[in-house]
Length: 390
Ligand SMILES: Cc1cc2nc3c(=O)[nH]c(=O)nc-3n(C[C@H](O)[C@H](O)[C@H](O)COP(=O)(O)OP(=O)(O)OC[C@H]3O[C@@H](n4cnc5c(N)ncnc54)[C@H](O)[C@@H]3O)c2cc1C
Image (cartoon, rainbow, N blue to C red; front, side, top):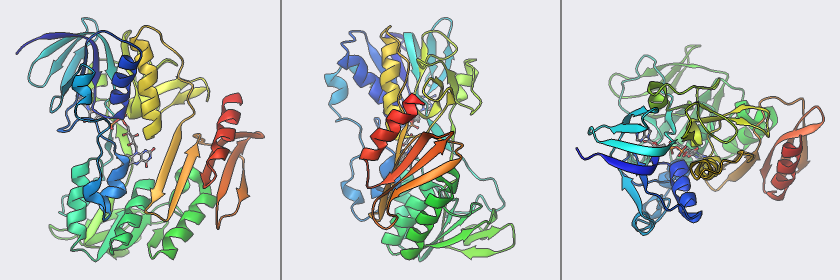
């Protein structure tokens, strides 16, 4: 196999890596860049997977982050279907699955996250879906065409988005979750109650306070059974039980991990090995803004971190001071935008009206630590400014 040398090796084919490549060229980086991804496709966006790709307009949805010519035009070597198997951080050498060795000056680890799979009786049944890549959505959509009922496992935004999308396609949806209402873990009980009202008003059935203990069916999923013994039937089961950072490569390379299981980085997104940076879902950095190690799985934040890491690769490291931003959309029914994140708050304040547009302000010790809005995006700027000052 031909060995090569590159100045910047970007590992991972998500938005974080793509943003780093774009920022390097934008800043006039004249060195060679290679982006290596085990995906079949060049970098693409994931949010449409649970939204447009499950809806009637799926065929027109282009997920690519940049046009196919962009890579050549910007002299970025794109290696799809190529996994990096190991990294020697001392000699700065990456070994790919086909045994090619790439020597590099700087590396970005943007290996993202993987779905958290539930290991329960019946897990091997056909008809149990997890969503991370477009192919997962295509398969679900094809099966949904012949399905009457779907069970969504989990109270996550993924489950809520899929419930909304499938309901729009005429599938009866039931969400089963241990929480008292969807999205409660991230956004608290008031927002969760609002989302519950919204979903049930559109025909989604909610089974709350119940843990799924088994997938029912003999080879093919027929639904789920809860810990309390309740059977919930469905021709389809979709699991939205979160994601885990993909740190396999980082662990093998001996990089330090953080308390949330991501690759531990300093405030400039430099990992425990000099010249090795991390960005996106896999990155757990010291956030000066929050005063703690932070890891989020938000698309815009992954892009922003790709940009920050590029400055490190350029030899001009800067602290990553972005306030993480997240958005979610339930079919065309509602869109929520959020800045934070807050894990603890002692008070919430609501401005506006739950029936039209509103903002929920999360406060701790009299200071805003997060805000969620539906229809009042200008409030997010105010919240950002307060979060940064806090
Ligand atoms: C279905 C879905 C819906 C979402 N919706 C929203 C939303 O509405 N709003 C929002 O803000 N966020 C949303 N997100 C989250 C957002 O998509 C992620 O935060 C973002 O994609 C993270 O980008 P990334 O580049 O860090 O990682 P990823 O997109 O996970 O990319 C990592 C890449 O690295 C590759 N890789 C891993 N290891 C190796 C290796 N050793 N060698 C080569 N390649 C490797 C992987 O194959 C993958 O291509 C959603 C996520 C999903 C899955």
